[in-house]
Image (cartoon, rainbow, N blue to C red):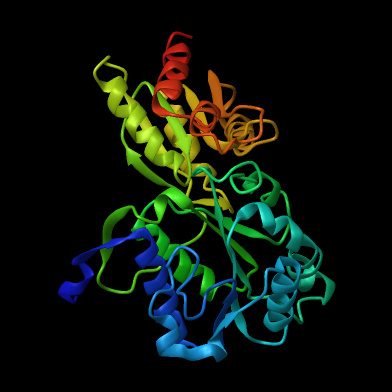
Length: 328
């Protein structure tokens, strides 16, 4: 076995995304990228820096501010045999492309009796970072209800790399969700090419008193919460979903069976949210356990930093919910 299997390199989340895309483009000339500013500019979050010089305008294609057209073109290209990565700068505007994504790409295999598929990846960026009501939403709960659609949301550079490689190799369609606050986050990524399979959660911290289930940036909030509560002798296990559809229900059930309590944490709305789905799937298997859900307040996310902070979950708010849960 090569020593590379054990070596890691330090890189930012955005660099991990770019590395995965570059490797897959080098390995398969059917892979191309299209979206706003993906060409010479290097991506809205600079996640594609350097790729335009390598692959040129034929495979790094800038599009107008027209998300419906971009997703539609990408879905058609996928059906024709290419493997496009369509980049939507803000998750809020993925809604404009829902028709092509949900009514065409996600259903193409069913419509064609398995003769056609849409190996399409839509990469979109969620979360609040001072940009206001129409640039801050987390709507992944809408997406996981769509049959035929896979949804992933990495929280670390290693997972950003491994899940992107899986997405670009998948028969699709896949929605790959990153977060504005994660792009500058550093982490260790394997030197060797590593693919992370869909449907496999990761336990980020072991604990015995309660389980916190989160994904994307909220995993960092969950880990901060667990650190705060450790000083109070409250031991939290943190489970990172990574893959929302398919979901690793087995890992979730084993964790909650060990700890006896469940706290679900998300940046989106709790009404019909990811946490509700997580709890339902767990309790269907192992029976009901004490549970509390934490998410954004039922209000638009303001661009005012004070109001934004009040709306989005933070470690103090999650810790208070955990204390309430532990007392049950």
